[in-house]
Image (cartoon, rainbow, N blue to C red; front, side, top):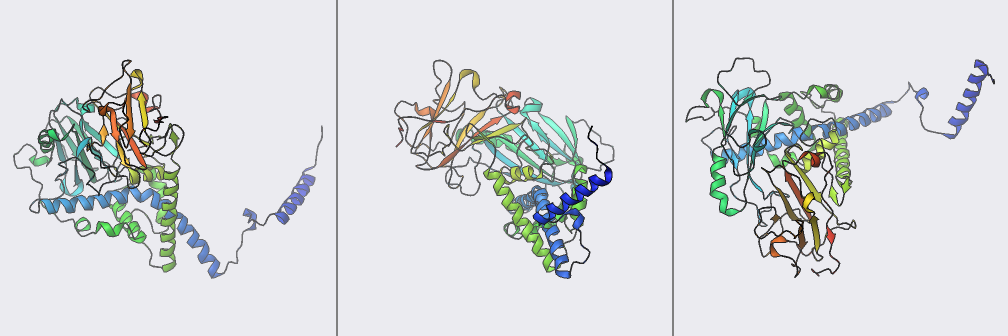
Length: 487
């Protein structure tokens, strides 16, 4: 057996190391220095802060968005009902979105929304009461201060029956009297609640408005009384802020995240990360240093983070021309980059057991959609979107240039199982056609009008079955018709 002495091995290794260093100018661990000048020290520290700022921006984006939307909703509620406490009150959308609406990107035309924000540390326990609704899907999602879903109450877990849900602050210790359908302890004092009520068309507006009005939030002490108004209190940190300014100032972003996470303790799983951020003056209860170089590094780190988010959004995993939904949507995942992307593009989204959204961008040949062509989405009888019978699915089209609804002569923006005139094939299959002009051989009820240009589609599945959540079922690709009927 070949043997080599230890001293000879060290000598050979030293010679190889010297030869390698002669060819490689990169710094080695062993080549540490103790004589950096002030400029080099400052550059190294700035680089570290820039890196910390990038990671804390990704981690803190959901918290920032929660604070910003809280401010928007509270200010909207104050304008709507100035005599009432805005926290705990609902801001309700009372009509379906149309092509004339230019504010909300990729609006949902399946449900009417409602939003409310509560500060449990100042308002105490609250009771969410929902009515009995058996003829349609509806839900109220409860989110923490990071837009992680705490729970969802509605069709899926109450079977449409009425329910009274008690929501407690994180550190509530007093005994609670009363019988409740469910008791939830929120992980953060600030919470958001979003109601969604399915609406087939505008003829149901009055009916759905009645359901919205019967979804009620009340202080625990007053929840059984007719007057369940929340007492007034002062929250200047939300009422004095200007939401628009928040989006353009990276230093203000970090100040908001520092304060919001101080008021709302992050999950314990984030502790090591936030402790690291704090060393750079970023994170829970931290204070930004006033040093100009420090602040410049923060701004650069924020730009780095935004570039990374743009890159991730641009390279989202695709299958059959559809973006693959993130399985961690709505959850307190440690994939901070993924969480940031989800909240940036689908703020306060449901977890997969409540809903899954598939965004379609290309056809079966990998080409972007163009309304001057005609495309067909065909579901075999046994491969229709697998959903709970109490829920539904929908296909909505948006103009790809602005991600808004596209005007058309039918004022039709969505197709779903309840759409009038929807026709199945003799074999039970369902073929939906997307084009600017209706091909002559397509039933009008199966046609989703598109603009004369680029578009995208979104397939929403509410209460998807397990095989959709696991990926066993996935929507088929849209195929361009060979005769290009829409040209």
